[in-house]
Structure formats: C-alpha cells, structure tokens
Length: 331
Image 1: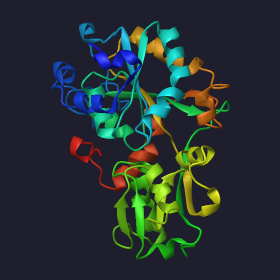
Image 2: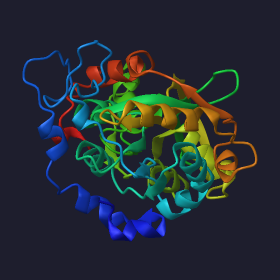
Image 3: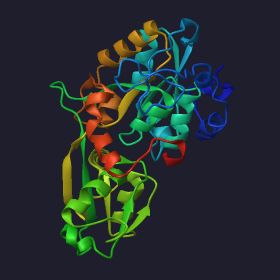
C-alpha cells in the first residue's frame, strides 16, 4: 500500500523516518540459512558469486507493484530535486506503465532501511553507502550517469578558503577540517585511506568535524567556519553552477583519481519483467533539454555497470578503514 501522502507526487521527509520503523517482513520471509552469501545479510543469498543478492527462488516472493517508489540520494534541498527528476519520473512511468512517486530522503540509513523493508523499489545511492545498500538492503546496482563515450565518475577535492593560509597537505596539521558523514566515500572514507600516504592522518593531525553533507562542508569553507573540507567534485560543481558559492573564494589543494558516482539500483526481489522495463527506461532516457540534464552538466545518458567490478576501489577503501556493513555503521 502506498502512503496517502504519496498521492501528491512526492513523499515528505518525515515519511521515510516512519518507514524505517516498519518490520522487515520482506527480508524475513526470504531468509535462507543454507546458501552462499559472502558479505550479504543473512536474509539474502548470492549463489552466483556476483556480490549482490539473488532474486528469490520462490516466484511468489517476486514484487510487482502497481506504484513504484523512486528515491535519489539525500541532498540539502530534496524539494528542488523532486522537480529536477520529474522528466525522468514521467519517462519511467511511460516505459514501465506504472505510477512512479519520488521519495524525498533525509538520510542514508533511512534510505537503505526503506529498500530493505520493501518500501523502496528504485534508488540512487551515494558512492560510499552503496555497499551498505547492497549488503543490508538487497540493492542491485545497474546504472550510473555518464557520457556518450562511457566515461563516468567524480573526484575527491580538498578545498580551503583562499585566505586560509593553507597551500599544501602539510598545512592541515592542527586545523579543523569538515568531513561529511562516516559512510561518505569522498567526504570521509577516501580521505582516511588516502591522506595518510601523504603524511596527514585525520583525527590525529587535524580535528575532524562532521558537517552532514558535501553542501554544508563547502559552504562552511566559504564562510571560514572550517579550515578545509574534502568533498565530491560533482556536488560542488553543481553548487557553483547554481550560484551557491563563488569559486574565486576557494582553492583546491588536493584532487584524487576518479571514483564511481551515485549508483542506480533496483530491489533484488522485483519481478524480472519489471526489472527489464526499469532498465529500458534508464538506458533510453535522453538527458538533453531536461532539467536533469542541466543539473548534471556533462552527463548524457545512463550507462550499465555492475557492483562487483565498478565498486572494487570503494570496497578497497572501506576495507582499509575497517568498515563493516552493519546497520550501526551506516550513517
């Protein structure tokens, strides 16, 4: 059943928190004790070894809802993104012949819980939380935003204010640096794995302050509330394009190699015919001339990916940080 407030076309932030309190009936019904599962939660199986949850063997457990719930990763202003995603939502409705509702999410943990509990069918998970969604919620990554030639990704950029007096990594010692959230890749996990190679250890050489989001980290650097901040290049590029800060006020003192960006996923228990339509909708969507295309400048289409290969670097970074895919570690 769809929450009545969803009829308006978007779900309020409070709704997702409500979903997180619901019982995990879907996953509990599918629990199989004797199967290969790797790092997956014990309610899933991975017999083919591709590191994502298998579709249930019992066809009666395949979900085939009349209304699909879609959520994009948590952002500073979900209402804006509801409008930006509307052209794609309409395309998804046309191809799948289903109603589609945009789900405004407020946290990574609540978004993962919503898919785990069967209340979220399609979702864009941020880079760092994607392995949590895969292992805890049975998410199946299948697409990324990219260019016509197949290129995709973003970088970790370390910003500081132009007047901060910080010009190189060594200058971070004794400073106050904004990380975004514990599970964020570029906002926390990658800095903790990569910075020590350059002689700087977060929490030892500088004070880590969690800002809550890439947007808040960047705005805090601009306001000089933080001395520096590691952020995702794609996020700050969009902020600059919207005029949320003046690029002349900041400078980059470090940039990493590319990482995969937000993954697009479907719930592992969706009916295969529905999955085929969902994939068709993603891979046939034309970004040109849409608000989505304007927001994600340089993106021309969704491109197919798989979790096992494309998230290897992220799993390596998280392993270096001792990350375990448990609900308590998802923030």
